[in-house]
Image 1 (tube, one colour):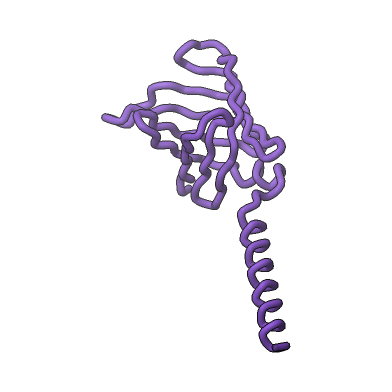
Image 2 (image 1 turned 180 degrees about the vertical axis):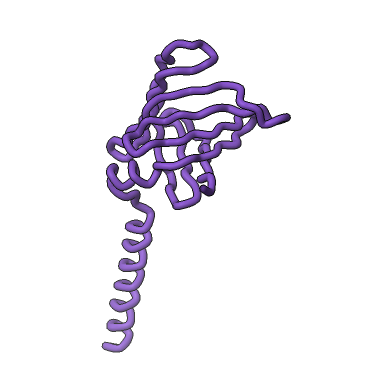
Length: 136
């Protein structure tokens, strides 16, 4: 009887420990670590939008859209990306389409960040988007 109780307690311990470790593995790193890890050039291929974005260490970004047919530059844009409370806040400052600052700030939930991809979604939407890191 003691063996069954001991086995049951041990099994419960394993289940709880595994569950907690998998939750911990799914948590995102600190804002500062995320801000550092997003530095570099990313490519987004989403529906009809094909976009390259380069993020600097201070959070400034520069990017451009490309035409799917000939891969030529079609729209240049600039702004800042700040990681705050686990959210990615994108503040556009310039778009060549309007030649003016763009007033739309977007707040995005980061779903996953690896060395190769960043998956996020707009805070008020459910459709995720993915950026793939461009190899340097």
